[in-house]
Length: 356
Ligand SMILES: NC(=O)c1ccc[n+]([C@@H]2O[C@H](COP(=O)([O-])OP(=O)(O)OC[C@H]3O[C@@H](n4cnc5c(N)ncnc54)[C@H](O)[C@@H]3O)[C@@H](O)[C@H]2O)c1
Ligand SMILES: [Zn+2]
Image 1 (tube, protein in one colour):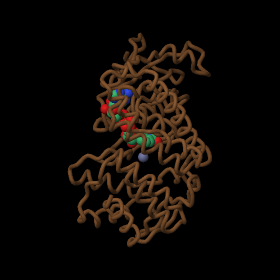
Image 2 (cartoon, rainbow, N blue to C red):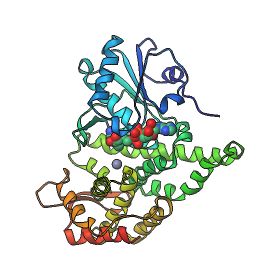
Image 3 (cartoon, rainbow, N blue to C red):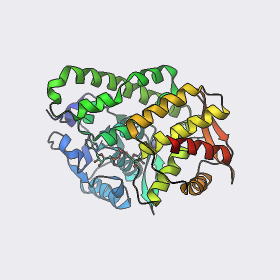
Image 4 (cartoon, rainbow, N blue to C red):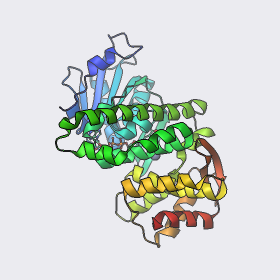
């Protein structure tokens, strides 16, 4: 049976609410079907990153205005990172700030976008160009939402979980390696999966635990450095090469999901970590296998290399012109930030990723 999220019941279980706040809901055209009908005013946004823009944010402001929301009202954002990022931004700016709650429905939004307080939207073709730090009043995790999530979306979020384990905890990394993602996805895709319930149940329980651990790793890092001056940069692991691969695919007219690019970026940056930070090669091998088995081969051409290096050199995370900065791993759970690596070695790492 399809999971239906009950807003009212969930708010009753949310600490710190007294039950008489005005509640307003935003969601998108895909996730609205996962919500039990409600009397709360609801705005349905068009789904997907293409609509993560000022126009959609304006719709949220207008919606709040029409319903005479006040600073004491509560905006409930139900959806993936697109909905929670825009909802958070609209809440941050409406009457200089009202409360909002995130109810993430994708794996990526659960383990990444809903934690850490970054909000915003895309502008002039640039991702998250406009935004601010404004943490939600609460984030409610219901892994049942994942039952309807397409496998590519699941894998996209899973890459960020792998990243969290790598930078955050050797113990969590062991847990994650034991989680058989291919088998999990096979069960999810099974036409008669209701009959497989006992196995599914075990997977779901295990997955819920992994999600919780992943959020905790990110939350811990963010708590130490909310404005990304130091250790929060560890969360960029895999993202210097990953973002460049994502942008290159985009330029070539092939949409590469963020998490797929991150998985490839992780492999590249693990290669660098082995070369200059003393990371054990076994970790590189393990994640290379995971990438090939679950995410498939990398489809790039050699002529992409110059563009990739150029894109990395322009990355906003670099401190000085011409230098390319990385977060690297000495060991699983022991990241070091602001590491400058020379272009020859970066090229070698990217060639390694391409060769898989
Ligand atoms: N704020 C942060 O710190 C942070 C961190 C990482 C990513 N992000 C942002 O998050 C966004 C990506 O997140 P996302 O992948 O969740 O994007 P998304 O919200 O666009 O969701 C992806 C797709 O899945 C659909 N969907 C959502 N939940 C579903 C469900 N349960 N079943 C079936 N379909 C479902 C959506 O409608 C959409 O079509 C990006 O805009 C990115 O910038 C923000
Ligand atoms: Zn990411």
